[in-house]
Length: 247
Image (cartoon, rainbow, N blue to C red; front, side, top):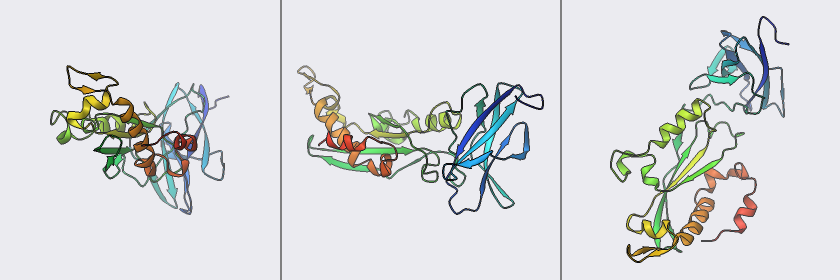
């Protein structure tokens, strides 16, 4: 039963690789932002910390913190909204040393022998990607990559789709899972060839979507692999994936 007049009670897992930092994970909550809430006990090799939360309302705002001696480091970004009636199925993977927003991996350009042209890839990495290596991410692949992130590269200059900003906001508010986003550019005049499965005589193009799809899967494995599939971290079925694609 919840105590101190609290009507709701649940657990929350926080997962973070402390390593040799000498620190410990604590929570601050809106019930008393000045008080550390200690975990019940660390488990799973000392990386998972389970907290028991209580609240008078069906929700509670919390902030994971890293305490190293007298120093307290707050996880960047907004406070986390925890639904008190929700089962403990969505652990928090905080970071404390990284910027609050996502970042880009270096741009990738590669030649496709199947299509006979160069393609460019841009990869968005979510906040904390390099710091909290225990987190696994879904990977979202998107076409028309030049329209996704950069206003100067959009088909209509200045009118990009602001995907980085949207992803940062949704992840911070826990409205969406943190994810890796892979955007592959279209190739301008050849776009109709690559995106349509049948040839259209009136458009004088089309019909190479199958080749494009195979190239895209191959690029996802070979070009994006260091970011999307590090140590099989984000794709447990990668061995099967490797055997079914070829440029």
